Length: 295
Image 1 (cartoon, rainbow, N blue to C red):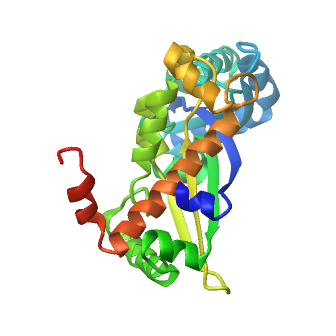
Image 2: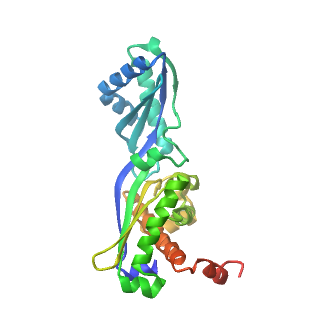
Image 3: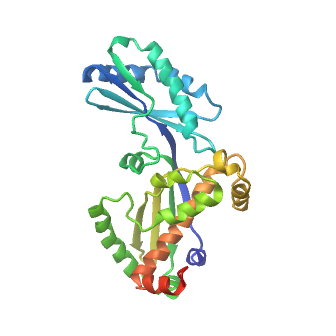
């Protein structure tokens, strides 16, 4: 964090916002599932009306359709204001699906319905959330001047960018949902302090990090967090200590959730820089030995 402040701070940008519920409809065969999708697409306005009738906040943005075998998976995507919104979108989607079940033309073809199919991947890391966004999709980026990096972290921009390229291969080999280092550390600390649902760290910790050497030989680094599930209203955010922490951050009141998402992303970028520099400069183990809790 000190390094980022010395470099002029972090630019953080929320570039996507969606919370999902993903019901599944079961048919006799694939053709009936295809016809159902066509019918839903033709009736999207009424489906949206039914979903939004359950909340003054939830807004149905769009539905993703995934057909497989004889199943029609519908991934409802909502904006949910300052709330994380999992329960909100569950209620809205149930209302929409109840209308669908009552009004679908070919009721005989519809065998089963389940409100959740595992395609929203609630509390689970997934590729669909990396690609399609769950919660807030936010980017944190900064340019670290060469001299500032060397003086404070004892590592050059060349070393860090080379290290990033090698680590990318390791991330691909492992099948990880994150090519960075430890975004879950900063996210978990922020979640506990501010009353977030800590179980959401499982999907919120996904990260896509990128580093390059600028023409001036400085370090540009950025991280995209594609499924950061945060709230400044509802749930644990109303607890006294957690609300006080949100107040310290200026994240209490209507319209503050994006600001909070940006702060969390800035914290994550700071952590990525710190550990990357420690590994690249071979200070990682010695720092633990000197400053670890057991010392």
